[in-house]
Amino acid sequence: MKLKSKYYLAWAKDEKIRKKGANGGFVTATLVSALENDFIDAALVFEKKSVYEGIPVLTSDPEVVKKCAGSLHGVPINLTRFVVEYAAKKRIGLPTKPCDARGIIEQAKRRQVNLDNIFMIGLNCGGTLHPLRMREMAAVFYGLDPDSVVREEIKEGKIFLISEEEGGEEKEKWMKIDELEQKGYGRRDACKSCTVKIPTMADLACGNWGVPQGEEKTFVEVCSEKGGAIFENAMESGYVEAEEAPGKGIEARKKIEAGMQKLAASWKERMDEVSTLSRSERFEFYVDELKNCIHCGACKAVCPVCACEDDSKCLDMNDERDSYAISMYNVLRIFHLMDSCIHCGQCEDVCPVDIPLTLIQRRFSERMQRHLGYVPGMDITEKPPLYETELRWSARVE
Amino acid sequence: MEESKGEEWEPKILAFCCNWCSYAGADAAGLERRQVPPTIRVIRVMCSGRIDPAFVLMGLLEGADAVLVTGCHIGDCHYVNANYKTRNRYEFLKEFVDELGLEPERLWLRWISASEGSLFAEMVREVTEKIKKIGPSPLRREWKK
Image (cartoon, rainbow over all chains, first blue to last red):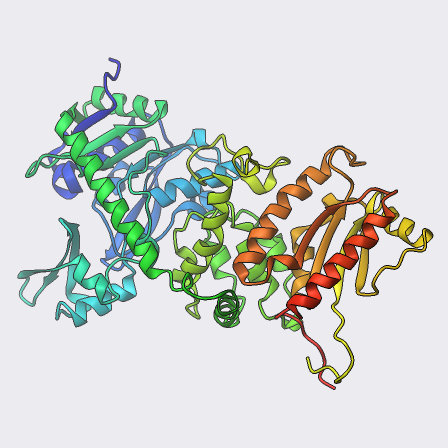
């Protein structure tokens, strides 16, 4: 059997998986099938501890994969560094958000992982929530005890929180995302302004956009040969069933993506408090924010693009005794990410002194990337421009 | 940053010169008895490709009012193509300095060959003049008297 089209509606054949996983359990079923049919040695999935906490698990046991099905919006972790550290030598399969996939591709460009060994099932991503903000949100706006929340769901522009009351009764409450975000809650800053919603750089791009209402199916776009082969195999070995996606669905999916991108662009503008400042005010803003840095190195440890490990220039050349206005660590990190930052916002999440790194990195890297005509993490064949001998042609023509 | 009154403020300019061209060019300026403003501090490197962007940034953080990156003309590099890399990195530095809120005039890239002593002297004069106009760098640090 050869795949005829690029777009499919697919679902898991196994009823248990279908019930546990979101949108027909396609992702879980495909991972299990890839494991059983020896496409991958291990799968990297999230074990849910609570709605605010998930632990990445590298496993070759299909039962564990089945147990981990379902989405977690409150765990905004980027898996790239986990893959580099623990699974660089193995053939693995994992579900990826667009920023995970882009991070893994950037690491592959830096020879930290081999992309041939990694099977990425991309998930459409409308954004993730910061667990601490989510707890606050549950208490303030939903009037729930944060610890009683057992499930969360995002659909149709609303955030649903489902709590379990004493006696096992479930209670569902929802609020509009827009409303929450006006008040400074809702999705993370990086997600609000992210314009990459469909991970076409992964092997498969899956999601519920474009699926007819009321149907428990997953819309799948086949983005690479490897993805196609594994998808085909999953159908042949009876883990997954699929039908060609109707034209209406493809249109609807595009429309949702365009709408999300428009919203992200407007958020980007609204959140950019630096753009209204003059040159000297801008300088003061950067110095003011970055002087709080305590050089713990957390932002570097989680950065999905950074591949320098412990002997990096930003650590070696940094000396606290220099007492520069902005430390060498920050200057070099920002400089080195100017061409490659994928705006995932991990650095801000882990920063112990709350430096608005999402904004700062975005300010620096976006203008450089525009100047270079380069989008990081999309195409494995494009080298990071900082390491090239010649300037990219798009920057040369002026 | 309080200078004694009456004395004119002198900028401090850091220049990276490559051994084969621009450093020899600076030498030539001396041999030809050309006046070069005493605002410049030269650091010799073997090639402009050796100038890590970190050096330039560190120079700025240390309080240099301007940093000059100089090297052989494109195509004349003694190490095949290293000054192409310099040009590439300079593009990054330019954007970085501009976004940080420093004036773009604080960063210069010039190609100067070993025989262009006059060009070297002229460049230093030009940079000094420009910097005097825009004033000391906001990153400048000096011991208070």
